[in-house]
Image 1 (cartoon, helix red, strand yellow):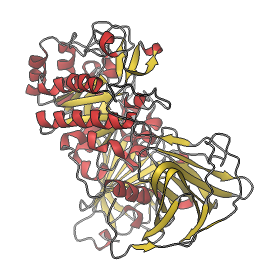
Image 2: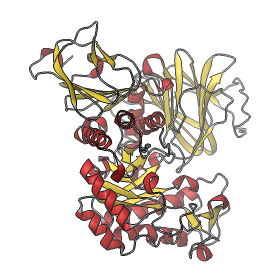
Image 3: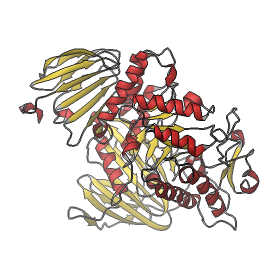
Image 4: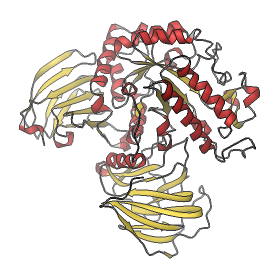
Length: 602
């Protein structure tokens, strides 16, 4: 965490044991610790253990509790003008849970210790986060009082940052991500933020060198700089399941290094998929490693290996590192890390050198990252929801939304949720796929829904129609051209309670603002869009009448359809009352102000 600054003060609070209103908690673990009341910046805290409070900024405090056993930090806010309770879990946003609802159990491999109660106007009524990976967190409406109650519990020492500053919730979450990552640097290569091709939906397990090289070549023509080869490369069996995981021999990719070299000759980077925790029952590794299991996954045909054992970590790290060290690949797609998050793991045996699974997982992932970086200066490692913990950030370069095939709205929500607390990492969409008869307008809608993430494409590129290829090339070009704004800019997703029907990103120093419109809503072309010189409006809604409000002055307008063809050019007068520009579904409106326009800096 960051050190105190001159604007941060340490508070010494007088605490005393006090009675407090009991809340029925049928799903929470029982605790006998007696909380003490601590007052801080207008928040009435209940804390077990030794407590201290530090003011970080206006409306932002850090509360620390410490004890030999369980500690808990609890507080309430009036539940006034509340619209949504945000968490980073897939489908985690929208409703307001009750105070007696089951708490979230956050671990290194599942979830992140952060949440926010969001109010009208997308302000954060209260955003909060913990400084450690393993916590139990509860939140919900107190039915008797209309308050919203929050609590975080852990063993030993716990610090919780509480933000009631009333800022836009995305700003509060960005500040929390900065708190988690303070004082550290990240090695995320630029290519991790460029569009990629994935074989999963398009080929599934039908992997051959010829099929991979064909898609890599076609993808490069469209702007896809990386190919991610998924399941199937390590087996000739095509019946799905994970019984063949564990040996990681390239049975479907013979002469692997030469094959990778041919892909590199196309100018395409190469990542290889691994189901990290699984030792399959049909693998040669089964006899040696199945006895070191955290849990059985019978329906998957495998067990989950226990990283507390050096023998297990050595086998897994050697297997994954082989892709970059021996075959010359550029990185790894590390899948199923969340399966290490067994709630009640067996006791560690005498060969284990770690007490906890998380400790062993840290050692395993750190060794994998070390070897990838040593073999490849721009190595990439992909993780996936729900393993989005800041504790895993040092071991990855990007996080992908969890699987949601042919579900553009779900892909949008999952990528935005992840973007909000991904810190330095690139965020990738789940792979985009579509029916061969999909019109180019709807193909463009798929891409616009993941405009603020890195798109991964997973269709057979050889059978796309000319119109589909045009739409794909056009929107991939938009993503590549505006990566600084779309992926690194100030992100402002609107209305999380409605699934983000409009998202805005403003580039730092680029003079560009991008708005994606997913519902027939007016677009703020004034102060809400920042001091733009270029304003891009991507229309993913069937309503073509895009209403621009709040602006002043004039701008040159270009309207392109889903395939990138110009359908209108002219001058637009931006007035407070609003002006309407027709933008077809899947199309793009680009407004440009002259450099000397006095209205460009609101």
